[in-house]
Image 1 (cartoon, rainbow, N blue to C red):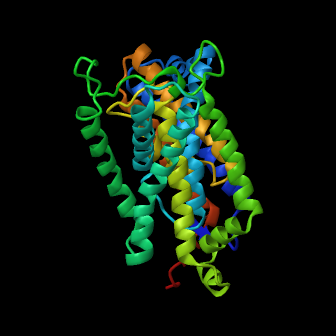
Image 2: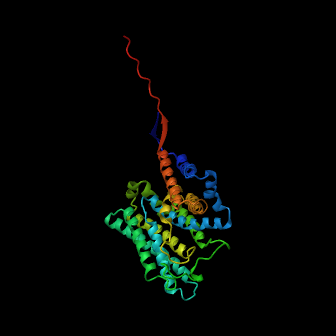
Length: 361
């Protein structure tokens, strides 16, 4: 018989192996799912995991989708390390897109080199402002940032819908709910001809490096880690819980807001009813698959980006619904949570003692 037994100390090896095992189990389960759907599993897996990477354009799309996932995830990871649970990066991304678009619509008629930087700054500030709401509610009223940040996602999406259906709708857009197309000077520069790779991926990688420096090399990052690992010790050392909450939420709001303006000023090129296919929520999985470590998050963002591309390719080549992407994302999270149990526990075989024989007559 097998039973779970608590380890004397958490397993560092299992902590590193858990995401790899989870990804492998996701792949194996996906293989079985394709078979149950009546598809050739080998061919379907090749379409899902390999075909998106066989062209320069496909590789470019991988990096295009990696940028917002990486930006959101590195900000969230900083907060998660401090037990500050921002679940609303999707809303902060949306507000960042709205703030940057507002600058473009207000000043875009005049060609100028300062408009794009102003849009990016507005996007960052918009995301920070939206994240400041749950920060204020937690530090002032002890309200759970999990609930408030999540509910604000839907308010942000309703605000987006109002603007693109109303005052910001393009009068020459044939009544479609979208803003006017951005001018060339309002768009992020393309880095590789023939692709949509833009400056957003550079921002994401730079901020991933800066997040590593912040968490591992600065006193503020150290405070956040201590607050997450040992709240009582942090309080005894005089580390301000309120300061940590504000810092964590504002950082994650800033990176999510930058991801939002990066989308509308990058691959989309205008404000639409849907800015993101759920990057802010998927980034939560990315952060945990990456073990809240900057380098691991980069790899996890690439994997999650591949799942988005694979889902789109499966729709085209295999006629599968768009929900196939969410299925693989859910499998990855499910297996990661299951494997995380073995960080603190291990399976041990227990041999039952044979039943005592009856007394001799």
